[in-house]
Amino acid sequence: MSLEALVDVVAGIFLVLGASFAFIAAVGVVRFPDVLTRMHAATKPQSFGLLLILAGLALRIDSMSDLTLVLVVALFQLLTAPVSAHMVGRAAFRADQVDRSALVVDEAD
Amino acid sequence: MTVVAAVCAVLLCLTGITCVIRIVRGPTMLDRTVAADVFVAACIGAIGVEAAINRHSNTLPILVALAFVAFLGSVSIARYAASQAIGGGSR
Image 1 (cartoon, each protein chain N blue to C red):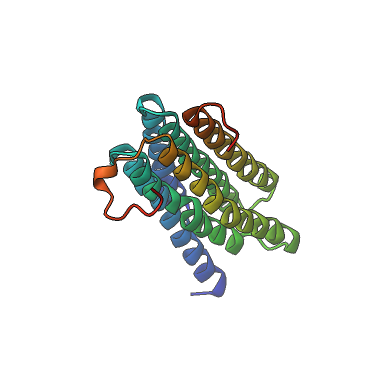
Image 2 (image 1 turned 135 degrees about the horizontal axis):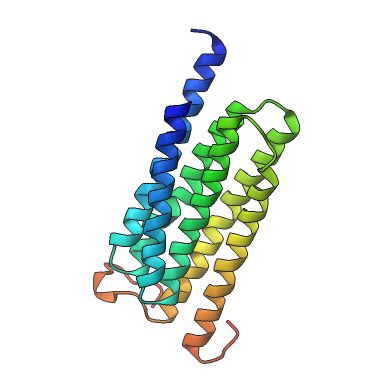
């Protein structure tokens, strides 16, 4: 097996894994009961699943400037996903849309 | 690569459909925001998969733009929901 074929196989595995992460997250978003549990399911594909897909993409393209652009997308996603998740979670807590009986510890109260 | 394309297309389409179901149903505005975030992540993934399979880089600027817009959208909706809950405060 040549090196190019091996790289293609690895890239394909990354792409399929990333897509399955997105699908699992969507199932979680539909099935879980309240905002915080849905966010728990939703934030995985936004970081790890997207990183897998971008890694597969980076293995398939070969110009340096395109790789930089892919890296920018990945870094930006890693920077912004926690911030927006924090904002949404805090808004849900303040708007009292959280199932407080399901919390074990409530240090924000 | 054809098999990879088919599998990824099916998975990402199902992701989009289930997210739209949650956006339609989702009792509160924040549920819809979370579902819309996953939808945009699926869109970024779909464009990335397409670029990877056809080995081109024409759509990479769209990825950057989508990542920006998703962040701004969810943050502004979260701020709006928080200020509404408290009663007009700008927190």
